[in-house]
Length: 398
Image (cartoon, rainbow, N blue to C red; front, side):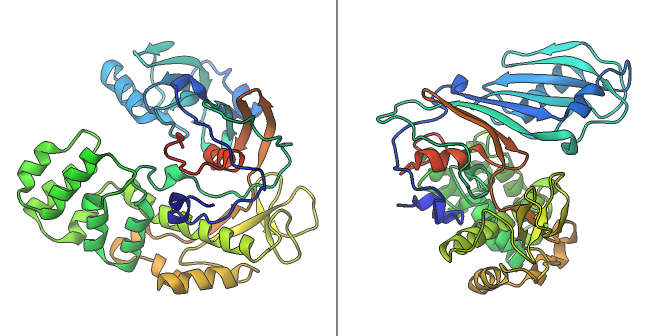
């Protein structure tokens, strides 16, 4: 049985056939370890004596953004990250100074530490990142973890975090913007309630939907609803929904569109699996990634990985997945050209490709702890979903 929240984000299949078992993740912060993995070439470049400082940020109980904001407030140092790590985990990641400035060897806060590793001539980038290593302890198990070999083909779905775990609406906002229905997009952001969210948050969203007094509602908003607060302030002085959408930070507006892309990708992968398409290996005329993640045509190279299209306004209609993508877009009442957004050209998306399957290494089950390494951009919760097959992922810590 596929959980309802999985279906809501476009996932309607399992790849493996193991029996569902009960178990929880992230019961404690130390139960979930994430460590970024950089290439040897990048690490060897840390030997320089000046340039852009690189730090190893270790944290627990605080997300990446808030840790870096705290360092800036306390020490005046602006640091950039290669990716965001959430608060409900013990994490290690690389951060760096974008400008060449003097910096201390170490920065410490209550929930984090940043130790300088060295300097680099050019800032490190996501291209230097091989992926993430995970050690995840599963608690409250009624049965032993299944005997995964570490060679199973697991589809590379976008995970729950992409869509908002407690309120999976980022893709719905993105779809509304793509359609040009900005009022609907605002309704999703401001007042759409979710059965997965807290009762208090749903009560606040009900008040927002009633629009009785925006100033009174703003006073009730928790710190976490900063986007909602800014939108209500914008709408109180200008009721134009287009201008309200424009007031949302560019990165978040772009994220909404990318979340909708992700939803369509999940739907495509699910539908192709249901129609028994070959998804573990590429075949003739497929688009593939080579061992260096460079996109190209199928060359009968065992190191090539099958690539699935991400829909955008330049979508390339020459693959065996066209049928599924067209079927899904017809149901959504959209075309690829709609992803060129005339009102917000800065968040238009061309499209692209993504691996069909998870690329995972060093897989091991040690008692009730699961260890593995994933390529950048893949989700540990998708791996765990296949192993545990939880009936209610959110209740299980996903």
